[in-house]
Length: 280
Image (cartoon, rainbow, N blue to C red; front, side, top):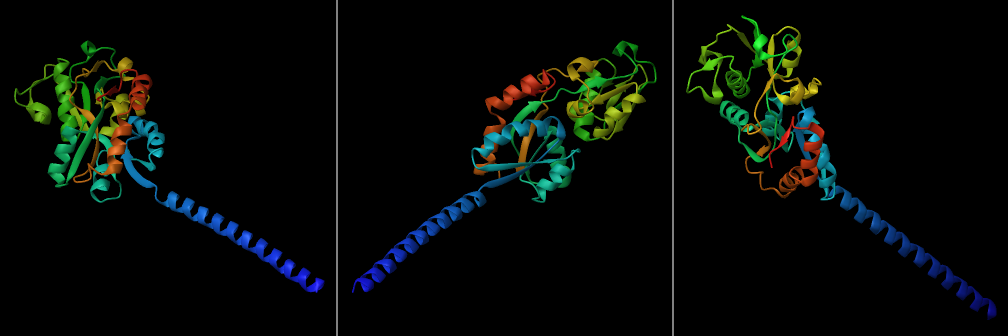
């Protein structure tokens, strides 16, 4: 009888241990499943950006978005065309490379439905040279390179006019082309070039009118190296852009908030020392 009782007690004890282990394993399994579910529920946002300063600015916003459950993936692109094409084709969720005059011109030509979300910063365009130390030294017949896209080309011509080097038709506006030049006293040879290549032309050209992002990539300091630079009230603010209809998506709104945060503003002001100016 004692042996039987001992055997029954032993079986009961083993059963209790096995049940406890089973419950523990189920709890662990449940926790792992919940953890995996949380990981897969994280929202991914792919944003195309120029390396400087756009990608650098997004890096500041990245940890802010991480706290909101958003994985910001920065896709660096070095030209102005691919970011809009990739956005229209849904390869990315947004881009951060351009100002509104460029966007307006691009979507009109390519029949795309893209919409700006928020202005982030202004990059004052500058006139640079390795040949002369002031615009007064610009020789007759000197070569001047400018961006070859419509909006930035017009912007460059307006800057050359403001610097006193040329005069444009009164109604030329931001879409000005070299055909709108009505006075060129120094007979400058103004040549449109693909914008990313403009810093490379400094070895040959007398003057180059360069977008600030490409100037920074070339290790130029706009506030020190530019012979003439746009004023801080320039209307060419760089924007966050999305497909039309996506501007009110929760994740896009969180991206907007992160990109206009005090942390980002402080970074722009301290990092670029006036070469880049917050627009929010």
